[in-house]
Length: 265
Image 1 (cartoon, rainbow, N blue to C red):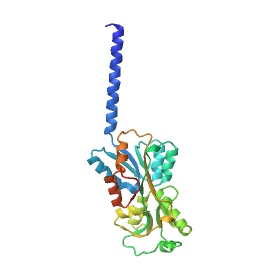
Image 2: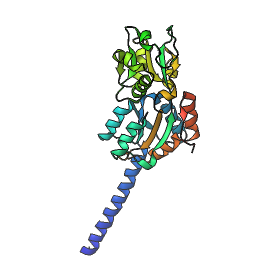
Image 3: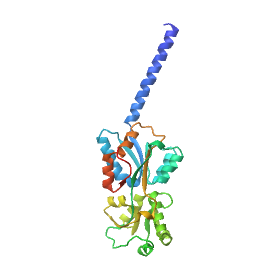
Image 4: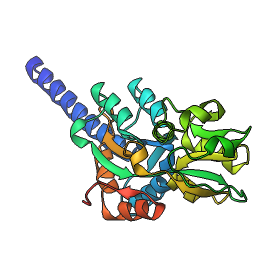
């Protein structure tokens, strides 16, 4: 075979192999689960939404649920997430400034409320107001909260107690947990007589009851932003992000007690 013809044939074969290989690679990524890092308080709702999306023709979704601070740090360090849902603006802003999320995909998805909870058989009653007697209610026991310096539920709770003039009287009585669900569990098991969690968390645990809801003016607005990550590789992640903003997902979020902030697609 003529050398020129032979070289041209080999080059064409290589190009075909590269094109076909690239196509198979893209198809393989599309079949992989969409990886979502989401605030712990979203667990039940997010899993229901993922199941509904899969039933409607979507892909599988793999979740990592934890405190937003821990998830953000993992993403910053290169963890393979396609979508991030934070329980506050701070940690989404942190990743945004670090160039780890796609700013043009960012949406404020949900709102929530924080509540004071007690074991379901507790006789504790109180009205949350400036200088309410939280320290007296605790006595020698502990107040369960998510980490007050990093985890959104904890920072919202600390802000509320500070603005209500109560923080200084209880700060040495706080049992800090790694995330809001861990704080909820302390109350559910009776290991703490009172705790501060999201209203939506209290709804999923029949072993606790809501004592009262914190006034919205006592803490920064609770906002759950969502965005695609810049390192995400799954081409179907954008579809899941759109589904989270659709009517079916909104119905699930609303039933769980969240306030929907994003406009329905």
